[in-house]
Length: 297
Image 1: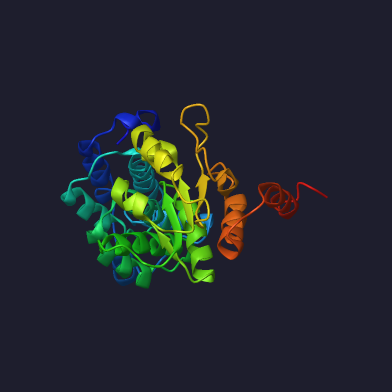
Image 2: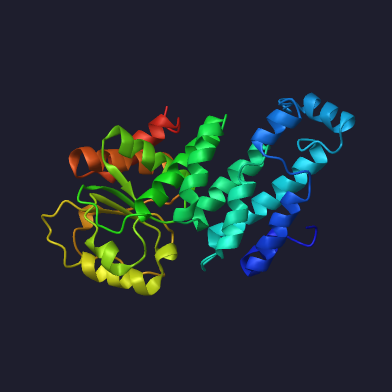
């Protein structure tokens, strides 16, 4: 595993994923259930406990050297998944599902994020199982969002109800949008980049990362947007920063918003306003955000 570097992530292949998964399984891998049964549920809740476990039992799954190697491998797998463009072979996905139950929270969370990006409908069962077992709310929350994504993809029929649609790979943003959707009793949708599905989606809010969608498909979307009935309740939030790279909508400009994906609170506030009132004033949203985050006293 030492040959892997985060600088090489963009060039890694499925064979590299297999090697990284082997690094997880070969460094004292044990599931949550196995740790409870075979290791008396010992958990390194503090650094002192971690050191004691490492000294008393170097082969323990949660001993620092073993856990660290599995964690590094899992984080590299996650980073690969964020930018990987192809379809991952099912046997690799099956191994990720297995490794997702690692006794280390850090490994589990990284692989749940991986599944969010490159999983498919076969991920539904493992995610449901993990949600029942997962003791940490943060990891469980990420798994719930991933489960929602794949349960929606399981059905090919269009959803009649309006809601929020996200076309991007930002899991932290998806978590926030899921909470907003739940609170407002609307759906959070993950439309595919298939143009027929995307253009037919009737969500109140479309949130799009143009770098994720791609230049050609964005041009098609933009052309479609320019023909939309101006009285239609449809809003577009663009979350990438490629202002000079992509074409821009020419109609319904008061319904188009540019917010970087890192500005999570701003997007949260904006989406809530659009769902509640069907429109929003960006200047007011930014002022509220600044006050909330303490930038204006």
